[in-house]
Image (cartoon, rainbow, N blue to C red; front, side, top):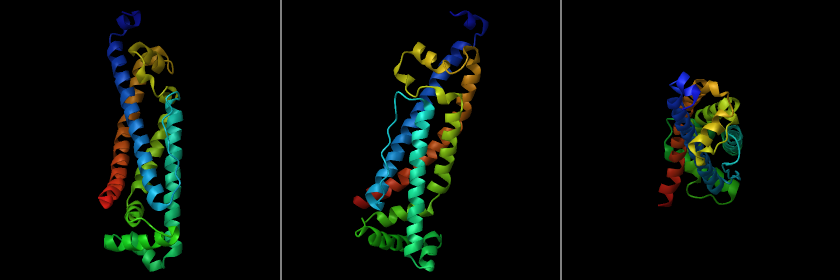
Length: 225
C-alpha cells in the first residue's frame, strides 16, 4: 500500500471512482460521435447537405475530441440555418410562417417543405419534407445542440481536457497514471469532483441530444418501411 493511501485512506476508493467516471465520459463521447454521424447521414441523404463524417481520435485528448464534435455540430447548425433561409426565399411569407405555426397540421407543413426541396434538388426523397419540418420545428438545433456545444467547450477547457480519451484500453495503473498525469497526485479528490461536476450535466445533455436525433432518424426508417 502506498504511503499516501495510509495517510489518505479514501484514496483507493477515489481512484476507482475516477476510473469509472472516465469510462462514463468516454461512453458519452462515443455515443455523441455516433449520433452526430447518424444525423449527418440523414441530412446528406435527404436534404442535399455535405456534412463530413467524424471519427473519434483514439490518440488524442478529451479536448481535441470535444473540438471535433463541436465543429460537426456547428456545421449542422449552419446547414439547418441554410435550409431555413431556402424556405424563406422560395416560399410566400404566409407559407413560410405556416412551417413554424404549431396550430398548422403536420402533413401540410411536410407538403410545403417537400415542394421546396423538389425545386432545390430537382427530385426530393419521400422523407425530405418530414426531416426538414422536424429540424425546423423542434428544439434540436436551437436548444439541444447549443447546450451540448457549450458543455463540450467547458469540458475541453477544464482539467479533463488534457486527458487522453482512450486510456480505457490500458491497465488500471496506467489508466490512473494517464488521468492523474494531468493533475497533481494529491489532487485526487479534486479530480473526482471535477469529473462528477461536468459529467452529470454532460450525460443529461447527451441523452437529450441522442434522443432528439433518434426522433429524426426514426422518421426516415418508418418512411422507408
